[in-house]
Image (cartoon, rainbow, N blue to C red; front, side, top):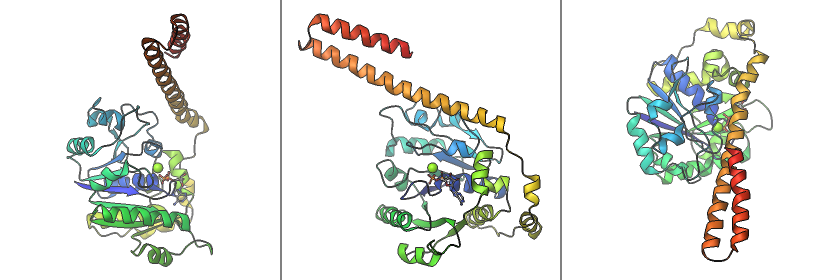
Length: 321
Ligand SMILES: Nc1ncnc2c1ncn2[C@@H]1O[C@H](COP(=O)(O)OP(=O)(O)O)[C@@H](O)[C@H]1O
Ligand SMILES: [Mg+2]
């Protein structure tokens, strides 16, 4: 199994877009058994790119030993397997040990793509150590490139054997850093240039990455080319498809977005936010009750006050159930 971590210094540069597209390209165009795993515990958004809106169980449940990895895997219509993430319960985090357990369970795949959190915070290090290679995503501006350099240096220090750079949202604007400049700053070649394109937000709305929703669009071709490079197969997209895309045929064929569909997609998100807020509040109240018990046992609280505080907060907790 080849483990590829998609990382960045800065957030919002296109990691999740890359994992979804590269994953679908490997599965659908290269026929490789591929799984994409959402290892981003602060903004776990991979599911939204792939039409998985309210997953359960998720990666944190697997890492906590509450569910086997297989039970959390979804199969995208393009053939890509997806292990979605979620905000973890308190205390659940990625460690070298539970990561090893996860990789053992996923041994049947040929490619595993990790959608990582941005930067080099604690959770990223075990992922980098477990990776055969990283794909560092950056944008053509100085803050994104400066942060990418930090990540590249970190990966080098941790001994990740192959370190590629992706320049995403490339545009022919005078203020956008050109590829050559990015390469000079990073002191390494850029392996993949993905142009800025409306196809990307459109494909997210569809829950179908651009390589599937618009396979001849420029961003899709860039991801398909990299997938072919990974597997060592030749890449010759048919000219007819390219021409059709350029002439706008895809606009006629493209599935229109159904506004009613939005409700369905947004509802699970609303529920998730409400549940997360409730869970955090429950936690807070449980901690408060435990603190009251300790205070009372140590004799810092008069019994009457203790009973009253407990009663009030127990009721709040019940109301949240
Ligand atoms: N090549 C691109 N062209 C246009 N928009 C893009 C492109 N790549 C990413 N985006 C947009 O940028 C936003 C952030 O992308 P995302 O993949 O979620 O970044 P990250 O995972 O690094 O936080 C998304 O809303 C997406 O639509
Ligand atoms: Mg992301």
